[in-house]
Length: 296
Image (tube, rainbow, N blue to C red; front, side):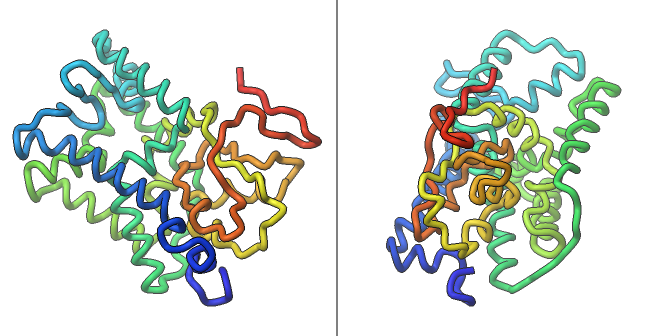
């Protein structure tokens, strides 16, 4: 961490100023809260800009959007989606193919607000260690959720989906929904850093599969300027994605291609050397200067 005992990003704040050192974080919070409010102003004030929830919504009475994992569950349950739901799923997949699959997790999902708060508080309280669990666990949960859906013919995951329950709790008040959200918060706070989003959530898995081929990436045009302060690693919710690109492991190009990168932009914020920036994967150098083509 920078200067021994300074919090991550301290050097960036000194170098760039507080605002630029938090630019992407501020934009993310505005996006998450703004999107959540669009869903809530209808039930609260009868301003029906968006109808539905993050699983399926209808914006301004003409734009359908269907959550990718919801759509996969419908297929697993052998339910035939309506044409409008198919169009909505296609639009969502196209959008996240462009901007990065797990951008959903860091820029849209309201549960990320809860887990980030837990992680922030965990750091302020100096809580270290915790349970160790493979990040591959989320893929097993993804698979088991689909198997359970296929066997039962019902969307099993939606019974406990914190994203759905959080919106329901904000509309209808206290109940089981808040118990689940509180459990997620306490788990991330006391048991495991980024435990829910990084190790359990199958929704994130679905978007990571889209993100494997997405165009928008975090690039490292100045990786030779890295001073090994480790601030990027400290703030990254998926720490394993940084090192291969940053240290050119196995000749890796200066671009993060791991599908689990959430494009949160925190590595860009906290880097005082401006090693990172957003960019397109097209034209990224690989090894001795070749071009990284789009996957076919």
